[in-house]
Length: 137
Image (cartoon, rainbow, N blue to C red):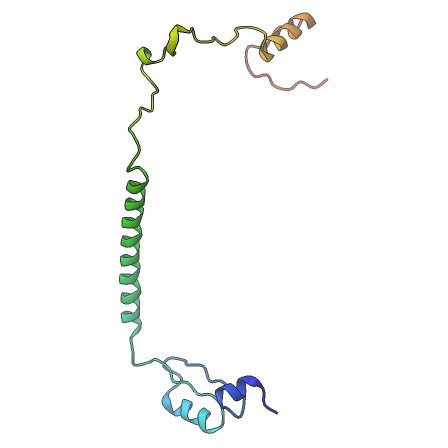
């Protein structure tokens, strides 16, 4: 009985030998292949562990530099057509509305805090000067 993977890979037994560096030599891959499985050789001669570490370090540095340059370019491009503005607001000479209209002033009484003050005064309890510790009754 064969399944699709066995037919696709052309193997008799569904045995796959993992490419383990320094352990799976060419002799083991040949033995697995002779037995009807799928033998793979390891990458023991391609790079040493130090060479792999150097490659990964350099690749990370190059990608980080590219990310940094891309971030700088995108922030510059986003503000390319923007007009400069002050973070402090407009000067006093420019704050007058056009047409000689007077600006609307906010109300000085009638807010929620004023209402709460009036309720406290009606109950006869003075407003605390600061935070108070809870008292047990």
